[in-house]
Length: 207
Image (cartoon, rainbow, N blue to C red):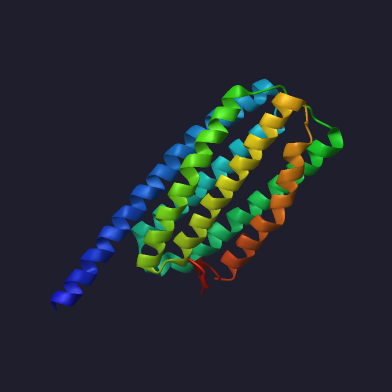
């Protein structure tokens, strides 16, 4: 009996931790979206605007997982599918945006606010993803694990955005960002398909 009480207590703590992480995800990405889209429009940076749209998708994923943690384990599979769909939407947008930027040879102005935003996101997102994976393992939640992968992808896109903005600001290499983003597309799509199929990984072990 004591073992069962302890197990339930640990589960409750993990659920609360998961909710806190998702609240932070929603709050941070909402702020990120506003800043990125606003300064992306001002600088004419399609990459920065795209990053803002990615932040909106990431926020929606946070809402989905918050709902899953509130509704309980019976919503696990539906939440996992919804996260998978959001990843595929993200992959489609990134691919479209990158190809359009390359074809149109869109040359954005420098955006130092965008550079700072990408740098801060590059620090925060890996830490957030790691904490989500810990909670996902404790709750045996594939949906939360898939959400952590989306947070990882946000970190990758932060690195791509930072590199693209820096190369454009320093050398005028406008094509660096859309090219790198195009390379990321199949990785994002693969994660989305695996989430839809119910395939996620805890550490190096896939389920």
